[in-house]
Structure formats: structure tokens, C-alpha cells
Amino acid sequence: RKIAQLSDKVVDSNPYSRLMALKKMGVCPKYEDIRLKTVIVVGVGGVGSVASEMLVRCGVGKLLIFDYDKVELANMNRLFYTPDQCGMTKVAAARKSLSFINPDVQIEDYNYNITTVENFEHFVSRITGGGIDGGPVDLVLSCVDNFQARIAINQACNEVGQTWFESGVSEDAVSGHIQLLKPGELACFECAPPLIVASGVDEKTLKREGVCAASLPTTMGIVAGFLVQNALKYMLDFGQVSNYLGYIALKDHFPAMTLRPNPECSSAWCRKQQAAFQAKLAATPAPTAKA
Ligand code: ATP
Ligand code: ZN
Image (cartoon, rainbow, N blue to C red; front, side, top):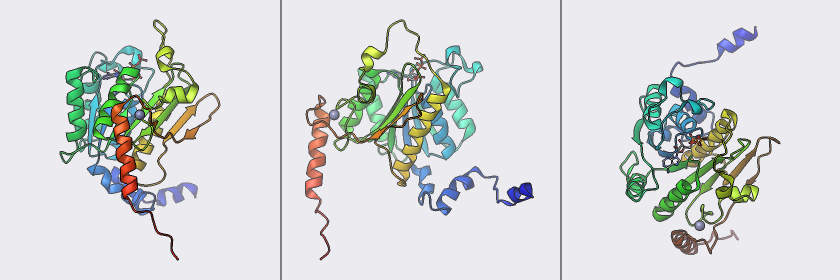
């Protein structure tokens, strides 16, 4: 009887119908807009590759991926890449699997270091002109594993006023976080780096030379899930988007908070964006109370 009940359920073979059910059920009234959205993923390693796969399976319109590294056997304790892909650039391997999973998604891939002067300029031009309509992208997801790359993304997004999410997993593999950064409105990466906020430890001293970092597919998969869930909520305007969400695996503790910008931030672009945001707030008439 149970089995009969289960098989009575309407199951359409088209994967989009399971996604569009989110609209019919009122969870996400504008789900079909996903096909108009463009996302940049910087770093297609343990978190970024899984986040990219989730976006592609959700039916995102366009994805731009950036990474300078190659697939190695040492990456096999993570999800997504397979041993036969060793030696390929991560972006080429990812592009191949992602377009195999969903050929409808437009993909651009860049195998370079975003922090060099020349590449940085090109990276900024893809933020402002890489959108599916030729305009700015909808969101940038940072899935890199080092301070310099995060600073570069922060600088690019502060300059052009691009909203982005930062993500990270600790070197001991048992904690992680995601953070939403809206230039001028919320703290930028230089206002207060998230790892300092979360643990009181400076990330620069956390990365020890010659020490093999631990990594777990579980923690990375959870952080990728948090990241894309909040990216969907942000882009498709449903639910509440987390500003900062942490994950402490050993205690299953999920600290959440909101980080406001630091008026004395070392980034001049951040201070400029803060002034612009305040001016915009001041120009918006306050809602009048009903008599
Ligand atoms: P591990 O360091 O533990 O061996 P990893 O280098 O694959 O692993 P991940 O945390 O899995 O690191 O992923 C981070 C990804 O970000 C990597 O694929 C890395 O190549 C990429 N990345 C880091 N910095 C840059 C950068 N400046 N430009 C482009 N890609 C970057
Ligand atoms: Zn700042």
C-alpha cells in the first residue's frame, strides 16, 4: 500500500518540473528567473566545483569559472573531480562535466591567476560585462583558499559595487563559513576578515608553511550547499539571505550574524561605497506612519 501511494505521486521526467514545483508550492514565486541569472565562481576547488555543479543542476543561465590550478590525485578526497581528469586544468575539467550535466548553461572558463595586474583587469571586465545580457553578472562567489585572492575579489567588487559571497573552510577541515558582502551596505573583506571574526585567528598565520592542510568532502559540501542556497535566495528573492553563517562541525553549531561596514576600512573604495549608500538612504523618503 505504501509503495502504491508513493508511485501515485506525479513524477515528470523533465528535471525542470521538479524545480518549477518550488514556484507552484509558493516557496520561490520567481523560480523561472534562474535561467536569466549569471554567476561567477572564483576557485573551482573543493567548494567551488560543488557550488558550480549545484548551480548548473538548478538551471542557472550562465556561469563563469576562474581557477589557475590543475586537477591532482590529492583532490580525490573531495567531491566532483574524478581520477581520469588528473592533469587537466580544473576549469577545463569542470566545464566538461558541467556542460555534460546541463548543456543549456552558457559557460566561460578562465585558467589564470586573478591577482596579477593584467588578469585582474580582465576579471573586473567579466564582472561588469559577463552577464547573460552583456551587463554585470548577478553574483560573484568566492571559493578560493588564500588571503591574496580574497583581497583581489574584494577590491574588484568594491570598485564596481558588485555584491558577492565569500566562503571558506578552515585548515583543520572542521569549520567553515559563508558571508554576504554588499559594497557600502555590509562589511567588506577588509572591514573585518571573516576568519578573524569567527575564531580570533588571523588567516595569514593560520596557513602554515610545510604543514599539510586537512580537508573533508563533508565540510566542503556543506559550505557549498550553504553558499548556493543563499545565492538562490538572493538572486530569486525568496526567504532570508544570511549575512554571515558559520559551521562548527565538532559541535554542529551554526553561528549567524550581520557585519556592518567599518567607517575606517583600509579600502578607499569601500569608504566611497559607504558614503554612496548613506547618501542613497538619506535621499529615500522615510515611510510615513498612518494617522
Ligand atoms: P589544497 O590547497 O588543500 O591542496 P586546493 O588548492 O584545491 O587544495 P581548494 O580549497 O580545494 O584548494 O580550492 C581553492 C581553489 O581556488 C583552488 O582550485 C585554487 O587553484 C583556486 N585559487 C586560489 N587562488 C586563486 C587565484 N589567485 N586565481 C585563481 N584561482 C585561485
Ligand atoms: Zn571595507
